[in-house]
Image 1 (cartoon, rainbow, N blue to C red):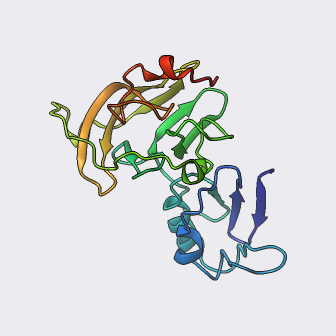
Image 2 (cartoon, rainbow, N blue to C red):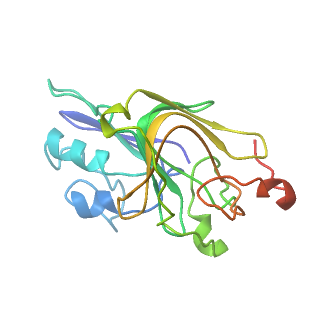
Image 3 (spheres, rainbow, N blue to C red):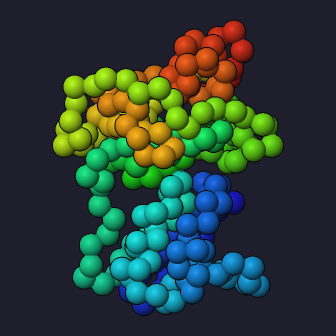
Length: 212
């Protein structure tokens, strides 16, 4: 599926169907723009103001929806706190000024942690059919980093047949928004087999996990 771009008078909206995890933040956040169950084009880029559409785009956890403003308003900015959320029985939702090799710079993404996605490193909802089970409330750890320090560039580097190596300052959050850990570098499971999720414990080796 290619990226679908819809042009409006004040804003351009891009939708990447391969990145979408159907969180429905778009259709519930601005139903006059993101119109569910209609024939033909489902996005009306003139259905709301640029500010309202940008607000909805920022709330899209997967980054499937991105916008480019044509007026004098500011585009989406890097978050004031880099963070990665562990979704219950689902992916890692990251919001940071990040770069993923081969995919470029982005601010939002949902990363597969069940090992089943056909669109790695991104989630494609395969965890649902695959029956993936993982807590969204992992045990908290002590950290000396403060919230104001969790800024700057973050590099997400999937290791061959192994975990995600995350380099950069960010907070690992529970699915309900509690602080789990604050790190400068972490290895996070993406094979689905770790007994210490969201962290890698080397289980990918015994499981024979294969991914570039």
